[in-house]
Length: 217
Image 1 (cartoon, rainbow, N blue to C red):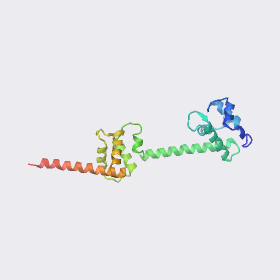
Image 2 (cartoon, one colour):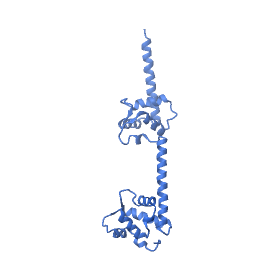
Image 3 (cartoon, rainbow, N blue to C red):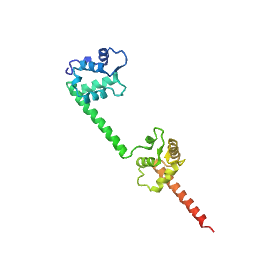
């Protein structure tokens, strides 16, 4: 079927009538594919599987297994705007777009994992404790602290890990963020360096005091 011949039959109401559905959504199933074929004059049996999979992803945007009126109208509008005369041509374009979107999303996720770009908030989003060394890597990436002296970073980590169990809990991180907001430091980076410096100085001072005690007659 060529574009322009039966566009009046492409409404969501026509689709529901074809499927004999009265609700707000129509299920994406074999009956839907048959109705789709009737509306657009396309034989989905000869369409490559990857193109059919892309059609489903294009139509069922929220992935709930059904098509609502908004999803259907967006699909129709995209077809009309494509300038293609047949649905077969449009399905090829849809597959290319969906394939590229999936590839880009996968590449972005791989890069994020490889570069350890998870933010501290993302790491603790599920409520699980995070190993301190992994959390520190995230801190360094998020707040550009890779050039900071290691002893300052370790001292900051000591201040952050309040119970000293070697992992960072959500409450520990949120408490630290709260203290930063109440401090005179406008950025988290400045506050982290400040806290690391203070803890380092305190540790060195205590160590020197202990040495003096050992040397006392």
